[in-house]
Amino acid sequence: MGFEDRVMLPPSEIPKQWYNIQADLDEPIPPVIHPATLQPISPDELAPIFPMALIEQEVSKERWIPIPEEVLNIFSLWRPTPLVRARRLEKYLQTPARIYYKNESLSPPGSHKPNTAVAQAYYNKREGVKRLTTETGAGQWGSALAFACNLFGLKCTVYMVRVSYEQKPYRKVLMNIWGAEVLPSPTDRTNAGKSILAQDPNSPGSLGIAISEAVEDAVTHEDTKYSLGSVLNHVLLHQTIVGLEAKRQFEMLGEYPDVLVGCVGGGSNFAGFVFPFIPDKLDDKRQTQIVAVEPLACPSLTQGIYTYDFGDTARMTPLLKMHTLGHNFIPPRIHAGGLRYHGMAPIVSFLYDKGIIEAVAYPQRAVFEAAVTFARVEGIVPAPETAHAVRAVIDEALRCKETGEEKVIAFNFSGHGYFDLSAYDEYLSDRMEDAVLPPERLKEMLSGLPKFSL
Image (cartoon, rainbow, N blue to C red; front, top):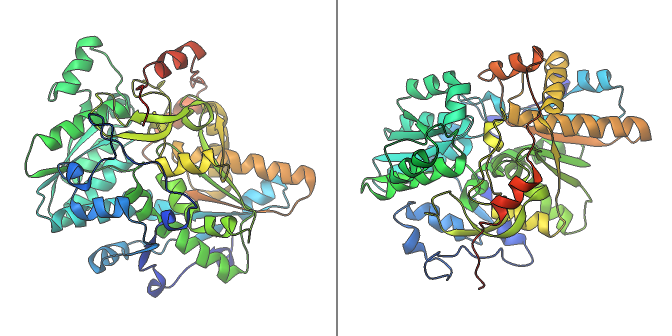
């Protein structure tokens, strides 16, 4: 790989605004519903959970939202990130496709997550909040929020899904280095956690359970707010800095992607990468194929139902219309902890329902096979979550080999896997199994969805 294969933006070209896709949709996404009144929730009703600045961003229809100068100053620690031509992978696959990846693993915590963590910590600090609570699956989001809270002098409490807490001990250490308190969820600290432990003392936990604990902790302490690393509109908004940079980098190359790929759990890295390109597709300027990639063990888009559901297990959150496997869903113990969420971002769900994006699901072993291939030819070890995107990219490149199409394929390299080496050890030693979601289990989880009509 030569320097010509690494497209860098000068620091002066870091985007100064976030892009809000809601301004360009033909119809509004379904409203967030208060579970008690079954009416659209008001900003004041969200105030115990989030600072008002983020609530305003959540409902905004403005196309461009200014990025605060203090946030931009912190972004300059690692942004802009490079757009890299994966020429060695192309050669290995013998494909005529041109493959590019946006390398978000260069942030201090090693993923795309600080793009929203820094913004959320800034707005909370500005409104006098002293502590943030959150959940984390694989630990990337928890690490990012710990990093951001440390920079702004905020306390941070992280409820980490127990199976990931045990699988990825060094993520906990990283969060501790940045001053965060990290608890294996479910815990005996909250009513939500105690309820789960009473049913199953050995519960592996889930993102839905961890969210319940973090929200309960926040609303029961006056100096505390809750912070979410995916799913909600303002989180996806903050991540669009990724796609805005990528779009400018493709302009510099004189290229435009034919296929855009991102892994999806809650939807933030995928949305941040692809949303700035979607207006071109909506205006029929481009017919870019946009692919969301999820685990076959947690297939919220490809097998879930598009309906209103709670964002957490204890039903403390408002109701969101999204593709969901049911808020009681307990995922299999796959290593892609960041993709084990039962639901999907409402905007991503809306776009999928409208056919603007598509989705594919893969089993765990096939994903790690692709990740090892990428690491051996490109040199970077992908996070298990990112590896899902790598799998889809390789499959698309091989289709191009069969058809002779010279497509431009681009994906978001959302994070590195250097804290996930135990998962790679399991794969390389042939101890990894493909977690299967039994149809009867899915049917059981979906039967618990809330039933009401607006």
